[in-house]
View 1 (spheres, helix red, strand yellow):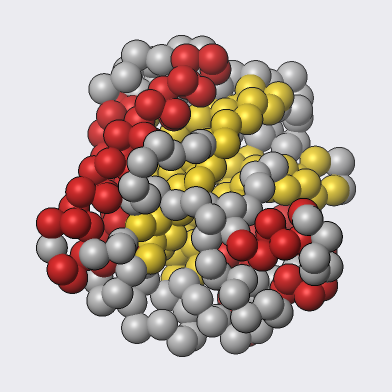
View 2: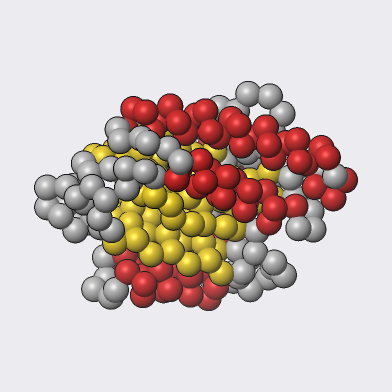
Length: 253
């Protein structure tokens, strides 16, 4: 298994509110986390870094070796983090209303578990096709699902950045968790909307299926988003499965 990620401020933002990192638990199981923060001044930066670092620290202390326990862990830990970020937002005026998306992937031998809140995405690239594994928790996606607007209209909708779920909201947080099987030569792409708002799925697929290195794939996707305008921060993380029968031997990376 290979993993590489990079984050870029984009062409139009003064600061980067995206944040991503990798962590291993006591069993050597890797966790990849990406967060896209929101809020005035530095509040978005604070929220995204809190989410990634707090979840990562908790994962490093965990002794989880199976997918079912990982799914339960995600739900519990994201609720705790939701409360932490909300309370911090209430404690200081400059942090009021801050929040973040979170998409996280726990990487097991034969499967991977994804947790998602917000509109950052995870994709599976398999057999020449790209499939979005996460659902956007956004106003525009709700309008598409209800048939009020088309997917084409959603791409340029003036309120496409309005989220219906984020980490940092009051009350109970609903977390989407899915379990997927690894097949040989799979790629999993985790990214912020700074990529998907600028680069089509067809363009993403072409770059990931190119013969360049994993680092070059990530760099090219970021470059493509910037060439298209770079309207937002861009974070790209790719997990590459190389084994034919499973993605990794436990503890290897």
